[in-house]
Length: 314
Image (cartoon, rainbow, N blue to C red; front, side, top):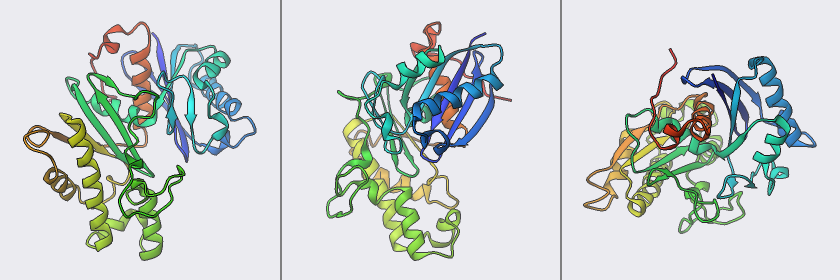
């Protein structure tokens, strides 16, 4: 029975998990990303991490496909890392092919946000034709599912909603541009605001204690306007909203949805947009990567065609 390894690489932590062909999950493991990314040769560090994990979790060599989820920009064919901000040594490297040679296993990769989205899409009976995922964490992750597949753009850079310019915003973005919406609408912005305006409040309780503050109500309004803009451009039938910020206690989800819908163009997407709030957990990224590995595995034609049966872990 083939097994699938999902590797979810984040700026803070890297998570690994195995899944069998019946979609049973096991072996969740989390380690600080800098343990491998901070090495002189980060690719060697990543290889060593995966090899050690497989030696412990897969002694019978059942893994048939590895899937990496990376928080950067990848080439359209998903073979080359174009930009990975916290591991720049991997920029312009054919990471999937290099790892495949070293591990002697098929390796594929995609944006981590697409694995979150794939997990959320598989929670429902039928895949939509057009769907969008917005995951608000440290940054603003954006996944595009168009005509039954993930959309990457002409060069691989599609879905960078966090980097549209916001009028009147003078802030410099880590991407090098000025005025990106992500500088004012992200977990990074919230962290800075909390440090300056609510230093005595635990970050997890920010919306419990300060949800009515004008800066935070405007934060929600900015997010609603940003998401609505993309809805009016793409006209999806399905929108997934998730991420660590939206999972914070007392985050005004109902108000976010109300404002978002108030900006939608009639008759569509206003009249037929389903909004789903994702229940993202610490394991969701690597679970989605496992499912994505199964989807691209050559012996899974039904999954590749977009039909599947999903089995939850007991």
